Length: 337
Image 1 (cartoon, rainbow, N blue to C red):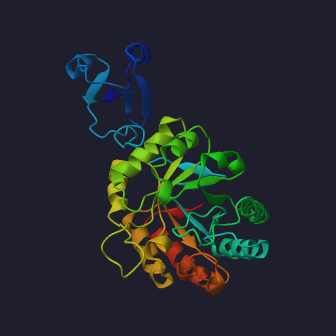
Image 2: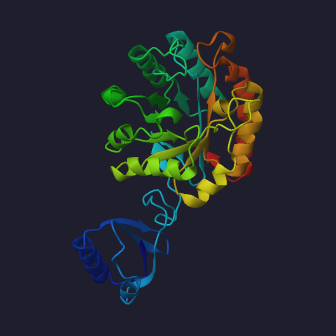
Image 3: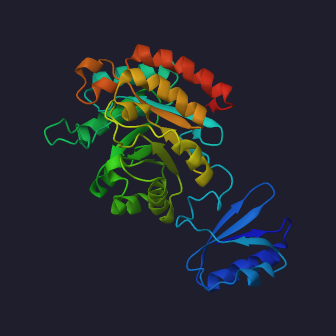
C-alpha cells in the first residue's frame, strides 16, 4: 500500500502519521519527488482501511499495490534511480558501457583489453574470474588469481570493475570489486541475494534463462529488502523455441521494466546472440528501446578465447561500435559520463 501526501503537508502531522504506522507494525519506504511525497507501507496491509487513511487531512490518496515487490516498484519510487559507480552514473539519462572479456585469462590479455576498451569510450571493465559453465569440462575461470588480475587491470586503467559472484563463501573476496554481478543461473539463489543485500555496493542482476519479469523484480527485492538498494537489472536473453541463435533478446522487457520499476536497466547483447555479427544491431535496438547501459564482450584474440570467443568483438570492432553507440545515446537524449 502507498500513501500519497498532500503538497506542503504539515511536517508535525506527517511525523505523527509515520509514528502511528510504525506502531501498527509497518516498516516505511519513503520517496520524495519535486511535488509529491509518498510513504510505502511494507507489511500486512489487509486490515488497514483505505477510507480511514483518506480521512486524514494530510493524505491526498491511498493505493493498494498488487505486485509483491515493493522497494523495486515504480509506484513506490516514481523517479528513476541513479546509481553512482566510482563517479560514473547510470540511470535517469546517464548511460554506461561495460566492456571486457568473458573470462580473465592472463595479465597481458586483461591489460590490453582494458586499455583498448577505455580508449574507445567504455567506462567500466568486465571480466569473469569465476565462470559458471554448462559443461563441467569447460574452462571454469582462474578464480582468485583471475580476480586479482582483473582488479589490477582496473586499477592500472582507472576503470571500475564488474565481475560475477557464484557463492556466498566468496563474498569476502569481492570486497574491492566495484560492481558484483549475479549471473543468470544464480538469479534465484536467494541465500546469495540476501547476503548481497547486506552490502553497500552496486549489484548487477541478470535475468534468468526462463524467468519472468516479475521473478526478476522479486529477486531484486531480495537484495533491496536487505538494505542494499543499488541494484541494476540486466536483460541478457531468454530461452525460447528458436535455435538459430544462442538466446532470444527480449527487447520488450526494456520498456515494460521501465514501466514497472525505477531501477536502471542494462542489456547484454553478447550473451543474447552468442554471435558477434548480431551484437551491433542488438545494441542499437537496446538503446532505442530505452536501456541505460550495455555490457559487451571484447577480447584481443577471440579465436583463441577460452570462453565465448564466438560472441566476442575484437578491440577494432568495439571501437567502431562505440562511435555508433555514442551517436545513438546522444540522439535519444542520454549521456555517457
